[in-house]
Length: 351
Image (cartoon, rainbow, N blue to C red; front, side):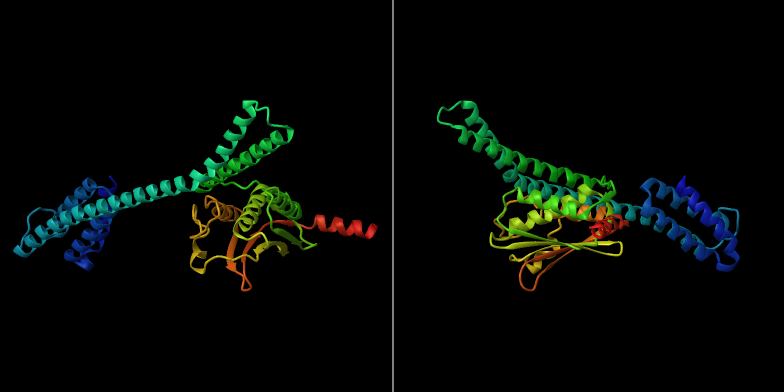
């Protein structure tokens, strides 16, 4: 119905202009219309459009009008050529579309296999290690070994807790990545104290017993921002945790927060080795891990950061510091409230 309706519509327009453009030009317009249909529709509607357009051109446009008779041999040849070209064009265009579809399917299949292998390789160690720790520790506790004193039992319970936390973190990463990929990220915005979020994220990272020192600088006049607290805390946690994983024990990590009008700017910087210049463009891709990197991880942390930042209508950039280290800069535009700042000024004046 679409193909027939489209050919009839074009024919009506051409019929009104036939006295000006001539019937041979109408043939090119109808042929072009069939080509457009061949790009979008299946083979049978296109073939129907080709046959119908040839009939319409002969009946309404080739002299004598309103008859299937063709007066000159030249017009007979043109009509036959039009009919053949329209059919061949429809078939070839359909074949090209089928070949492109098969090529896309092969590419998607290859990408799926690559993703599966990458996921399997990335998670095999990250999931197996904490599971093995939990199983070994629980076996020792359940065995009722008389040699286990209270200190040993406490250490085993602590190992179980750490392994469970690590396992839960990997599961959270996978769930967050699946939400980002599915487009189900819906920020639950509320008024947030940026200082509180930063200190909570730093506390979570320090609970992993990292060796690096984290230095916090927050502008005293930073207002309240209407953001998703959970997302922003996860963003900062992933950046800080990533810095702790890829820098030495003698390195330092800085986190700075400031606001310019209604734009929140967060900077996470370290003085570690930084990123290879030829890999900076890939670090936000899912499952990407730096080449020749001995550190663990699934390669999901930074991709989740990017997905969450974009869900908050923000941007994130990465650059190497000239003196050494990496610098992540996040800019998020949002609603602000200076109520907190005004209250703090009032308390200071009262003192």
